[in-house]
Amino acid sequence: MAAFNKVILIGNLTRDPDLRVTNTGLSICKLGLAVNRNYTTKEGDSKDETTYVDIDAFGKQAEILSKYMQKGKPLMIEGRLKLDQWESSDGQKRSKLGVVLENFQFIGGREESSSQSSNAYDDNAGRSSEVNSNENSSNQSDESFDGDVPF
Image (cartoon, rainbow, N blue to C red):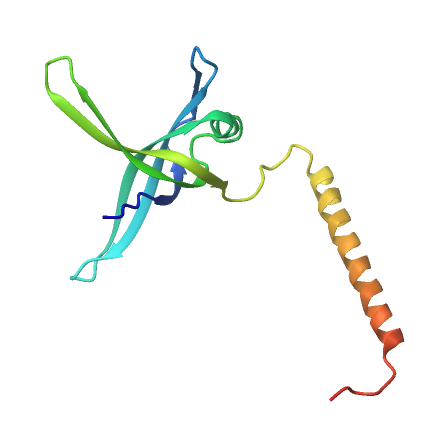
C-alpha cells in the first residue's frame, strides 16, 4: 500500500523561534504555530477554532527562520507529520504529533524600516524603471506598425 505524509499549514508563530546547535554542528529550530479555522455550526453560529502545532526545522532553514521570524508573524510551512513518544517521570507513556519542516514561505510584507523615505525611494525607483521599460516597448511597437492588419 502506498503512503503519503504531507502537511501544509498557514498560521502565526506562538513564540519566538528557539534555535539550538548540536555537538555535530546541526542547527535545530523549534517553532510553535497557531492555525485558525473559522466555521459555521448547524445552528448558524460562527465559531473559531485554533490548533497549536509544534514545528521542528533543521539546518539552514532553521537558521533562516530563527533570524527572520518572531512571535506573531505569519508563516506557511510544508512538512511531514512525526509522532514523538516518551515516558514521563511518573512512568506514563506519552505521545504527541508534530511536524518536521521540509519547506516554508514567509507571508506578509516586509518590516517597516525606521527610515520611511528610503523605502519610498526604493519603491519609486523600481516603479520608474518599470514605467520606462514599458514606455520604450510601446514606442517600438508604434514605429513598426505599418497600418496593415494581419487578419
